[in-house]
Image (cartoon, rainbow, N blue to C red; front, side, top):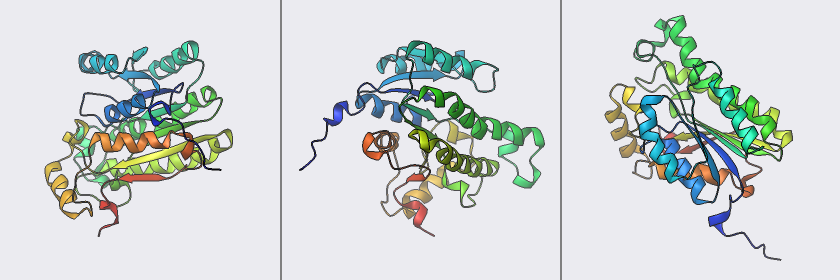
Length: 262
């Protein structure tokens, strides 16, 4: 018998997801949030601080997000507060998108072998450990299984000029994805690292000579095209569907094929 698939517009209807990392309408997390919402999911959205709130609040309203809260992972208790409210109001969580990373300027702009301990720890804390912490808090809410996403980059596997200590953090993050996938898989929870090609986001603006990196990606990628936040969002949303329930623990490259080229 030929299977009858549900209308793709409501493929995530009834699902509830947390989106962490929307800074403005150029954010990868915003592209993902739009794709999730377009498939019928209900979303909780966080913003970094009061300064960011004015940029994120209109986007959260456009998503009709019933939960809109501050979340700075370096502020004690804020991460726990978000998950506590989700547990209280929704009683469940079906997917989690972690799209945050940070490295102090002096750590990011210097050589890896010169990075100070404080800079290294802060880079790893925000860029890697915060994902594990969110996974820990999300696990009991994913009673019927679920999906966890985090954002990585090609610089985790290959040395990319000027990516520096962030490449080390992303390599750790990808390892964390594999271990989390193995540990949570028996509960029906899958874990993914999403690796977009270079995008002109606010976070990327901190990387020296980023325009040159984008030009190189466009000229060398087999698709001869730069990725958009919508490209990333659509591919990420697919992995939250039931049809992708046996895909877990890997890195999905959304880069026009750039990662296969020497």
